[in-house]
Length: 65
Image 1 (spheres, helix red, strand yellow):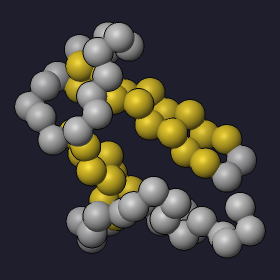
Image 2 (cartoon, rainbow, N blue to C red; image 1 turned 45 degrees about the horizontal axis):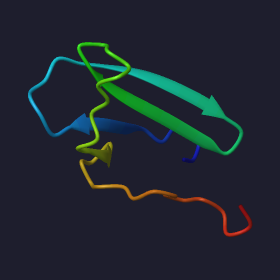
Image 3 (cartoon, rainbow, N blue to C red; image 1 turned 90 degrees about the vertical axis):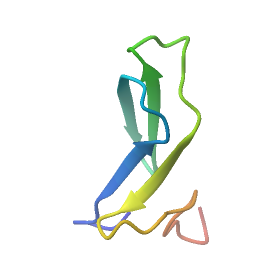
């Protein structure tokens, strides 16, 4: 992501979703959990930008990473 870029992680279910975010150099990891249970991860989701366009893994990642 570039400075001032925004993204949204959207679960594809109607479950009560809670999440955890890990930010490290060069990556952002978002885990979605049903009812906050870390043993019940939600794997059906989309990542979209501020315009609602779907983003893929590695979006804007530099070629040397």
